[in-house]
Picture 1: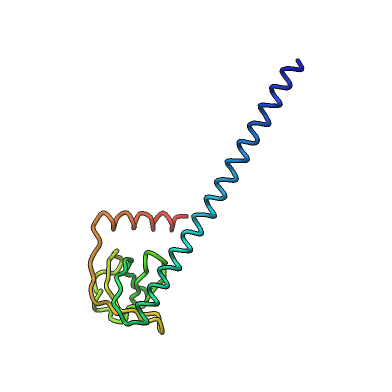
Picture 2: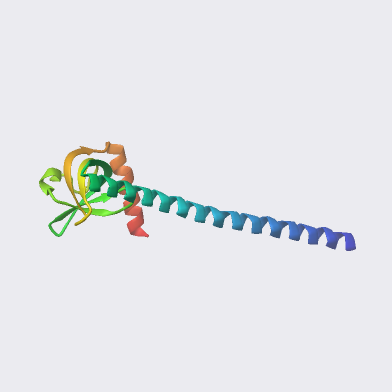
Length: 137
């Protein structure tokens, strides 16, 4: 009987240590992923600021949105929203996932679209599904 209790106790201790180790590593992974995302956003913002300061064109990928008569571009990398100073260049692409080449203006957080290219059809539907899932949550 004493031997059975010792084995049961050893089993419980082993299981609890294993569960504790798994919980700790998943929390560390979550922190690590958040840090990576923050670094990506920071890097994208620095790159945008450099391009704006030099007056160079920048290639960006994101969504064209139109709300209340105002046309905006939402960047995929850092989820920043930019006002479009020449909305005629993107007319008809509202709600589409696009790749653009544009000049950025950091002062009023706007951009001037020089070139626009639609993303492939599969990419459009995948991103739309993801956005719909986020809205449901």
